[in-house]
Length: 363
Image (cartoon, rainbow, N blue to C red):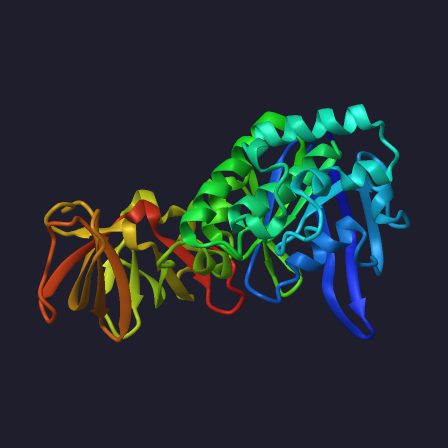
């Protein structure tokens, strides 16, 4: 296993800086996910760890060794690509064994490792087939098996599930999680899919425009976002945002929603926001933290108009008009209001988030 350390790592293409001084500490055996929108630099950062992209500045250590100037084959890593990268004319067995044979590993050891990896991934019955005879999910298992037989310090995954359909993505994602538990090696995994990030990661690196916006556990990223970007990127549908202003009324904190009502915030939930009275902010609340006011009379509530009701089986998703703003709410499957109906919705005061209107930082 190996810890990975990045110190002020930068990537430039000419005069254009793509990765902006990234600092990161990854513990040995952790499953770390880089997540963010297209163009945020997550794959570039992964390729720099792999040695496929040159580091313009800063230091990268793997297992305590500075590897900036080491070739990819000398970094003791294995990488699983989005497009599988299998040799079409070689059998599954030969694809998995190819790297070991290049390194002159004894054939008995090659066979031992290939058979062990195939058993782990449940592809023993496919060892004599060519890639063209495999499904997408089976090809991805072979690509993973080729990485496993290397027995590296570090596994790198570059959006490995993006070519699979939804059902296969779920299946292979579960297999990757189980595989990590079995082998216990350090994993860095790149995806744009927040569900993959939340379900796979020990900790998540959220990237925006080549910078780390937040690094934390899935619970921290989802429940305690430190920036508006993180709050808006995670969750489906994402967090609701409402422009508002903080004020104090008779000693109680109030949120005046732009084009809408005012909310009185209970004192126990408002302590951390008092220094910001008078400030223009964005109020954030997730759809699942809204409830019918009758069910939660102890929460502050607002009047909304129903614009759309989407039944999802286990729940219903409501689109509502709150003043000049549109919000989403998750409700029980038996709550089925008509379009145009007026509802009074309560907001969980313990799950309200306030973000600075200019910087996006949480207050």
